[in-house]
Every structure is written in C-alpha cells, then in structure tokens.
Length: 177
Image (cartoon, rainbow, N blue to C red; front, side, top):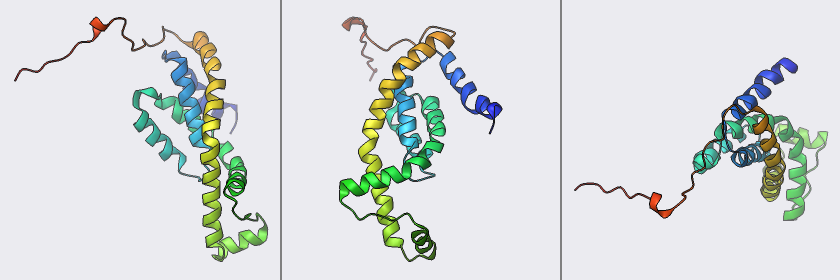
C-alpha cells in the first residue's frame, strides 16, 4: 500500500465527493458516523452496520462519505478492540479477560468459549458507551474541516437547503376521487 493506492482509494473519492457540492454539516455527520461505526469491535460487521445506518437515516446521511469513512476506519478498528474490551469490563464490573498466549491457546482449542463470548460482549458494550462521544467529537472536528475543503474543492454552489421561506410554499396535493 503506497501513495498511489492511497490516492486512488481515499483521496480521489474524497475529492469527487467534495466537488459535487454537498453540505458541510451533512458531510461532517456522515464521516463521523462512518468512522464511529467503522471502529465497531467485531471485524466484518462494520459495512453492514454502516449500510443499515444509511438506510435508516436516508437523505440525512451522505452514503458515499459514510462508506469512505468506514473504509478509512478499518485499521483503527483493530487497534481499539482491546480498549473497548477493557472499558466494557470496567463499566460492567465483569471479569478481566487475559490477553496471553495461554488464553489464545484456550480459545483455539475451544476451552474458553464462554470467556470469549463474554469478552466480545464487553468489547461491544465498551463501544456502545464510547460511540456517542466518538460521534459527537468527530462531528465537531470534521465540520470546520469540510467547510474549508468544500470552499477549496467544490466546483459549484452547495446543494440547496430544503427550507420553506413562507407558509404559502406549502402545497397540498389533492387526488381526484
């Protein structure tokens, strides 16, 4: 993975997103959501979670940005499994799962299945507790970044906001019976 790979997989898609004129607030939220879901402590589940979130949030979430952020978060995901595990253990008062070669041997031979399931639960619980803070912190951090990036790279005006300037703009569609 060299600079060429990074350019093709991260920089080029980001520039494409910025040039399409999306709203900075939506992009900041979508990127924060993608990363927050991307660090979920069970590998292989994050794309599914991100897809579900995009489906549930609809137009409030910019799907390409959320998925790109989810992809970018993949290396960080593995580095946060142990901190989420320890946080979950502390908050739940659960037993400490030893991360030793002996514990790995027990896991591989099937002798520690209950402990493994419990540690997975603790890691997910730790993520559930931390996720709102991660999301909020990243959203606050990303908003000014996307404001600057959109001004620098956008080729057109931002997409129009869907606000009504007066009540007369509200139209009711009546169907003939």
